[in-house]
Each structure stands twice: as structure tokens, then as C-alpha cells.
Length: 113
Length: 116
Image 1 (cartoon, helix red, strand yellow):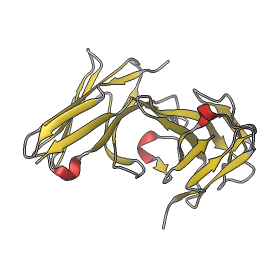
Image 2 (cartoon, chains in turn brown, blue; image 1 turned 180 degrees about the horizontal axis):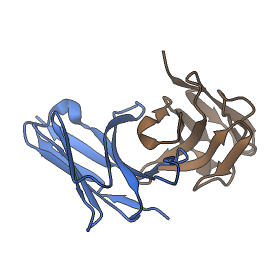
Image 3 (cartoon, each protein chain N blue to C red; image 1 turned 30 degrees about the horizontal axis):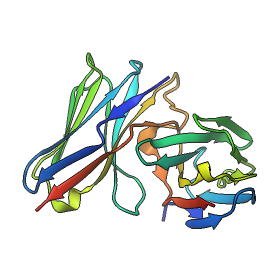
């Protein structure tokens, strides 16, 4: 089944403790993105990647890192999480970068205390 | 940069039509989308329209695009309680080569509540 998976789905952590949210797709997609969703703000893009070893900042990259060492994986790294990073995070992937072809993961709800 | 705006709440009675509105700022070649998010769930693409179209109909859904006013609407006919959800308008600019680099710009989301 074609899908985007994220782990963990729920995470509660404390300020400053490094964490990684994994994202994996099994569709051989070139484009992958991370978004965060906050009430009243919709979804905002954090980082995106056009291919292996090619990443770029989205609209709200501060406090986040990403890597794309393999085509299927695009982890989101929070080196020193802070409470303002409490949010719902979505990973997405697409073959050609077209929005109508994007597959979204199920979301990761992160709480930073 | 792109900016997409939506009203935050809409309440309708079951069986009535719902109209969710959205405005956007970019006038480039663009795709415009409507996504649905049910409580605790991910995003479901409902429909999309390219900026050279005026209207698209898909069963109970009708999308209208007014390019002059940069206004997009989603009409849901015969709204049901199962349509209660958050509806997001989004746009993606199409660059040379046909790609959008996987970037969608979302509105704030409209919470649709359907009363029996």
C-alpha cells in the first residue's frame, strides 16, 4: 500500500531534550516536506527536499533540522525543543512536486513541556 | 510571498448548502486546493482547480474561482453531519518545468459545524 508513515504518532518531552520524528515513504517520491499545524494558523512548511542531499528552508525553519540521506526517509530533528514547538507535524511526499499529487502522513502530535 | 486567508468558522443546518470562502494573493500560475481534516485525522485532498479554470464540479462539491478578485469558494450541497470537519484552502505556485517543489501554502482552516 502506498503510504507515508511517521513515528512516533504522539510524543511528550521536556525542553532541551533532542528528538527526531521519522518520516518514510514507499512510493519512490523525490519531493518530501515537513509542515506544522497550529490552531488558527493552518499548516506552515518547515523544510522541504527535492531529492537526496537536497533540502531547503520553508516558511518556519527556525529550531528545526532535516536530512535526506536516502530517498525514502526525511527525518525532522529538534536539537533543543522549546514549548513553542508544541504542535501537530505532518510529513508529505510527491513524485514531481505538484501539490495535487501530495501524500500526507498521519501526523505526529508533539508536546514540549 | 503567497498568502491564503479563510474565515475560521461556519455553522450550517443538515441538508443546507455550505459555502466556504478563501482569498489568495499570488497571481502566478497556480493550483488551488481544498483539503478536509476530520478530528484526529490527517489531510484528505477533496478537489483542486488550476488557475486557468473558473469552476469545477465533483458530485456534491463545486469549486468556483474568481481570478479577478483572487477568491476561491467551496460549495458543499446537501451538507451532512459527516461533513463536519476543518476545511483548508491551499495554493501551490507552478514554476517552469511544471513543479511546485512540493510546497503548499495553506489558509488558517475553516471549522464547519453541521447541526442536525
